[in-house]
Length: 221
Image (cartoon, rainbow, N blue to C red):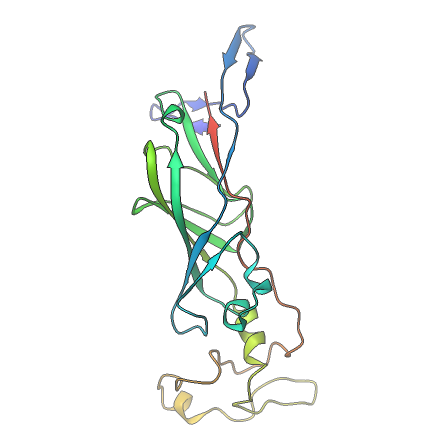
């Protein structure tokens, strides 16, 4: 279902076939099969979060499974990009083009050809991108933001910078001088700082990033 500019609600179909309406009329619709958007994907990482500037993924996989510790423990916004070709036959007044991201951990902002197409944060991770795409070559960016957990667990692999209570509570024993003075955290070492120790080094990592499968789908009223 989608709202039209005139305020009316329009039903969309996702498969070719003949559909019966409540009025008794029959409508035949022709819809293209979904088009899989495979790799490689270029992934650029938010700076200052312990990850490399970018990496290439031959296929989509959760970042927590990557061999590079900086990628595996990354927390922040990772930008997935790749060219996207839309067949000319997919465009038309009575056709809608929908981007299906499959699965996202946790929030994704989609940009097409330098234009923001929308934000998704729950299933189904789909956006109507008809007004943002054009026939032929397009540039797709998916900016995925995950949670802090993986970076905090990764920091526990590094030498301790502060002492925390070990009597069943996990509060910090002494605030560092830079924090007390309101200064930025010194570079190097751990990326994160908390006044409470939330994770141990052997905690399981969370799935993160764009997991897919990514598909382009066509819908028709």
